[in-house]
Image 1 (spheres, rainbow, N blue to C red):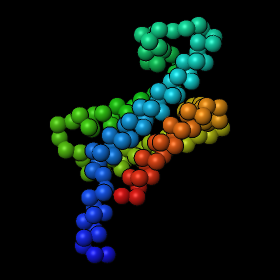
Image 2 (image 1 turned 45 degrees about the vertical axis):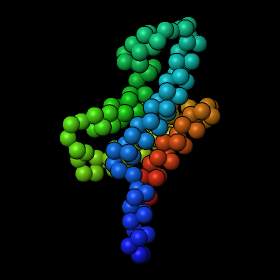
Image 3 (image 1 turned 120 degrees about the vertical axis):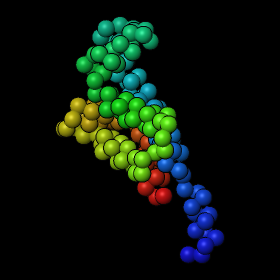
Image 4 (image 1 turned 30 degrees about the vertical axis):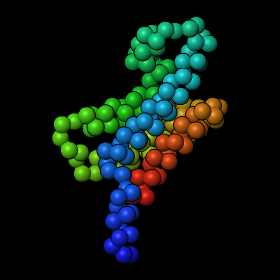
Length: 143
């Protein structure tokens, strides 16, 4: 491969910070979609909840506990991006791998895998949000 082409390809690759920022945005959207699905299910039984009540439910209620692994990855990304020190070598790849490992829907498995499977089976917005995260992850793997 000639040197000019190598430089151009290198310039097109995203930095670890850029990759994490894109992953964060995609995960936030996915989390929002999943949270809305769970909120709708909760409100069918318990009636409408305010934004403040929803926050309390997300933090404390067992029905929302399955969403916490996504929240935890987002928090890890935030901590890395907001940190004073440069990113540790490979931190972006580790979080990408953790995200890939988490976002595997399954009828049997962890609470997250089961609920995620149901969300992807019944809500087109969840499928689109899942696809957006997978696209970010596949773009990082190609770099």
